[in-house]
Amino acid sequence: MRLQYKVLGAAAVFLTFLCTAVLYPVLPGVLDTHWGATGEVNGRMGKFWGAFILPIILLGVYFLFQLIPKLDPLGYNILGFEEQYLQFQFVLYSFMFLVQAHILAWNLGYKMSPNMVVPFGVGALFYFIGHILPQTRRNWFFGFRTPWTLSSDIVWEKTNSLAGRVFKVLGVIVLFSVFAPTYMVYFVLAPTIFCAIALLAYSFVEFRRQKN
View 1 (cartoon, one colour):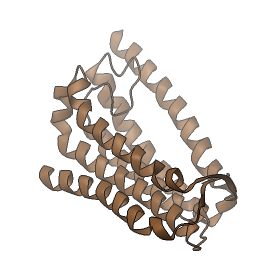
View 2 (cartoon, one colour):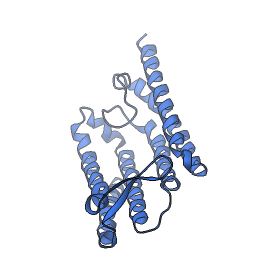
View 3 (cartoon, helix red, strand yellow):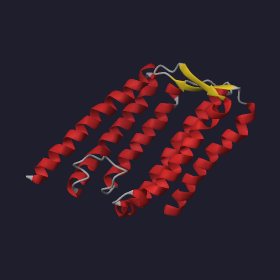
View 4 (cartoon, one colour):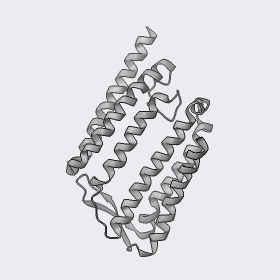
């Protein structure tokens, strides 16, 4: 299964570049590349960078994920949940492919609001993060990391177990934002910030409890 997810992840990155390269000749000279909270275009770029900036970022992310187990002082722990780590990479690459597909389609005249597209990707990404967080082990790059979770395996396990349930709920909340696309940003930012603060506080309290 690990080899399968490695192949799928690399294929998602390659497909992002391939679709962009194939459609590049028919794209306009200036591309819409950024949208505001209510779905209106508020940023444009020249053709090359507008088309390839996200695939280039995706490629950088891909190579970073390959390096993380070697860079992390606790990288051996990542090998303990390597399959989930590879699954997350594939889901993230697929999400970035979805965003790139929307940019390409929009600039080819298929103007569906990003507030009707992004919630599906973000919601699925959050839900999947919630699925794998309880399976992670203490490391410096992946999981809900605070000074207290990084200092204790027990605090890490309890905090990330709770964070897993929280992110699943967040994923469902984000999905519901398709019914109120104008307010999508509030469905994403407000609950995420609140939950992050709550989990931060929980990890501190749990650390103090364990210490005492």
